[in-house]
Length: 114
Length: 112
Picture 1 (cartoon, chains in turn blue, brown):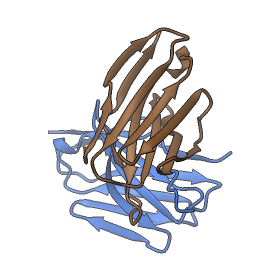
Picture 2: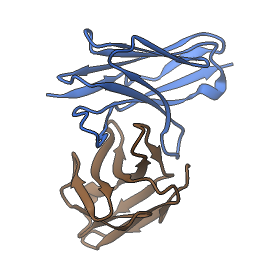
Picture 3: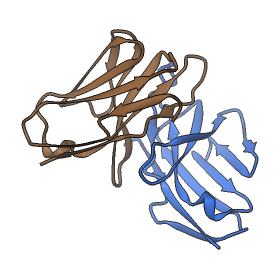
């Protein structure tokens, strides 16, 4: 079956460390993959998009990698801060036909401790 | 929340009653989406619209219908609510030239 998997267990790290979140998918060949942040009681907020021909994408303290052979994306937050605590969702469009009908992972909750 | 509002924000209703959720945008974006979010499942696409009066089904469309008579409004209707439709519903918008989706604040619906 087609699915996207993210670590269901919360990731707890110390402030200042690098947080690494994983997104694995099966039976898709997406042209791009997206990462969103979601705070409790709020809608997801777009963070980064990485295309299949890009190995790595950076935005400030965020870095995303995309390995189409492993069917995996890694999301890194360097110099993490308590304010980075949230749930992070990965999403892909399995069809890439222009309608952007995203399939989301269930998300990984990140807790950054002072 | 990128010029997106959802109403109501919270609703409790009884099984078998009709429910309509409204998504309103001020961005004039062409694409609009309805998702539901349940623990352990993440966001799942219910219906989407790619223009006025142009809509199509998503992954979990059974029991839901939508309408879009104006660019700014996208309505989600549960014709006869069931307890399995208890969820948090999110609306999202997207402009044609981008893949980024912008989400509304969500509606928490409880069907008793």
